[in-house]
Amino acid sequence: MSDLLRALILGIVQGLTEFLPVSSSGHLELTKWLFDDHSLASESMLMTVTLHAATALATIVVFRRDVGEILRDLFRFEWNTGTKFSLLILVSMVPAAFVGLLFDELLTTLFDRQIVLVAFMLVVTGLLLFLADRARRTEKSVDWMDAALIGVAQAIAILPGISRSGATISTSVLLGIDRERSARFSFLMVVPLILGKIAKDIIDGAFTETSSALELSVGFLAAFFTGMAACVWMIKLVKKAELKYFAYYCFAVALIVLVVKMIF
Image (cartoon, rainbow, N blue to C red; front, side, top):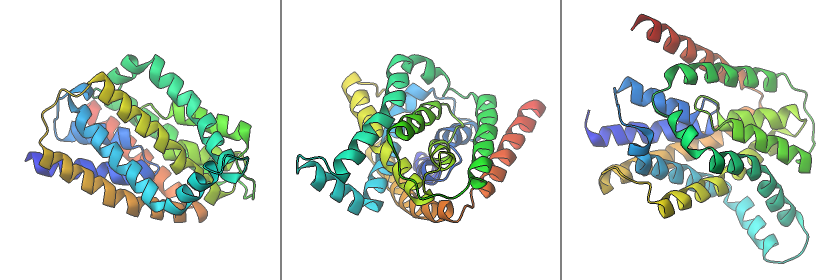
């Protein structure tokens, strides 16, 4: 397979699975496994960061009005809706930032073709989605304790195969938060973390691969446009309580992976 086609496929996979509740990290690992890509996670760091930057930008574009309102409220330097929302996001970031900083090396080993782990974590994701679909509907907004608990869900979702959007949206809905608010908070809360991780990797000089500018551009554009479409679609699905179909998908992929690993 050509490097450009590989970059295109990885970009599409990242764009879809970053927002749809099926685990982007798990699917990227499965994609590498299917293509017999033996590179370590550290050896594909530049492409990984590029793809995550694309989906972060897609989130900002989709929620540009929300982001604009939050920034306007912040620069008024007073207590208001935007200030509170920003602090809630900050609270939600703490667990994932803590885990990421303290266990960075350990987490890296979990992204080196740990396919069986991915399969079992996809089952966990599916169970969460089933529970969220059965949750009662409320009009509750995110409060401080909710933000902390959703942040814990996001930290757990660092594991490959646990969907970040699936875990955070499911947790929000199970806490009684309005479904549309749950999706909005879930997608916006990850943007600062992604940008922080990108900055950390740049400072650490963690890029050892030699992907060309063209490959990175193809991957970025594929992830960006696919991500925008997936983000809008996911918001509609959450409002309609149709997450169970993704649960079926997670179970099916997990079963196929485990059967193939047993045979081969």
